[in-house]
Length: 257
Image (cartoon, rainbow, N blue to C red; front, side, top):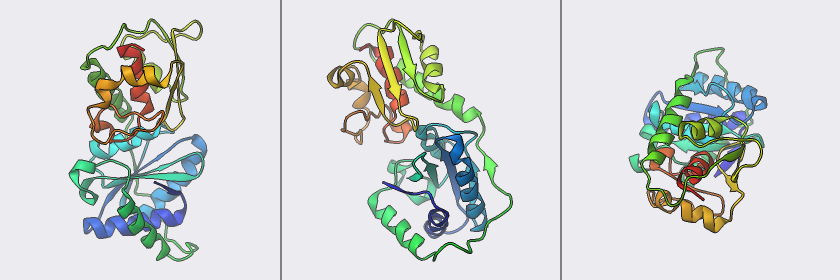
């Protein structure tokens, strides 16, 4: 469900969303690393020039925050620029059925976006606006952490709370969430080691896959669209029916491994 995060992709998404919403649309643009910021800003300039309104995430952040923001600001979609140069595409608002709002774009919609991209030509003369886009406020990060903590706190423990955790996660969000849940984060001698990919979508742990799934059984059961592949967990439909390694890691630590 990824596409190259090229200028043509943003032009094609603008055409798709304009047709789907019947007018001016709102698109969130997030990015995985600081090096992707220029591509995100160029995308925002194309969206503004194409009759849409772009909202840039405040800094390089994991993908789940961009997807989460779709619902929070009632946007019609989001593009997340990955370090690889690919883009994750989410739909929301008026562009998709409410039950799939914020989720990764289905194949049927991706095919329509591909058609729109192909109709945009070679991209050499795409119009770009000099301004007009906005930034999503830092408060969105706090809202994400609050929602994660609230959801995890409501789950029944499946074992003893982990005594301490070591974390490998670039943005610092997992450590913030664990501290909110009262789980000590240490550098050495941890009972559980957690690693979350830079884009925030994949969890690796120092315990077996079976132990991870056992700890997350009740969390996984909250979503009929929970992914089934290794390392992919969905804790709450509010996290966009998508793999959210950040929230899964915190759930694993809070519920016991």
